[in-house]
Image 1 (cartoon, one colour):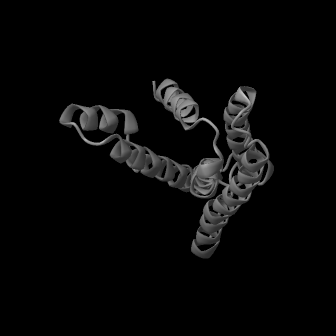
Image 2: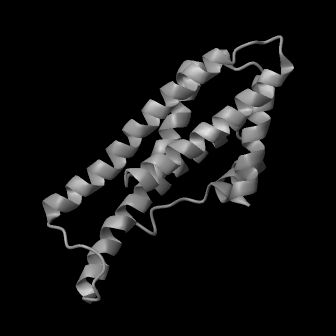
Length: 169
């Protein structure tokens, strides 16, 4: 689980150096997020088993079937939560789709950041599922079904590129 994660910052630098299209960088960043989500789920399962075997009163012991069930509950459950929040975000973007009001542009950007955080919090903390996978699926769902409802695509992309750069740094 530790070795499965890729480094999107290093890959992005290499892609920029060789002149690859920016869309490829976004695909690799998204794939890296799914890898990170899977790695966190595997880490949770294996660390619970390890802590249980230490005999210090922490962790849980799982059979193979229970381990697979936990993995699928955390990953597929996180995906379901993400899809639900994604459709909620699409509904909010539809409500805020007023192109003549410049203040709505900033509210749309703030809404995407807020819903992404709420998706992570609900999946990870409240439901005990994968928050990373939830956020990825929230973004995919909102991008697929709500892209036409974004007032200022340039503002939205600039914000998320800046946030991605800051968090990777």
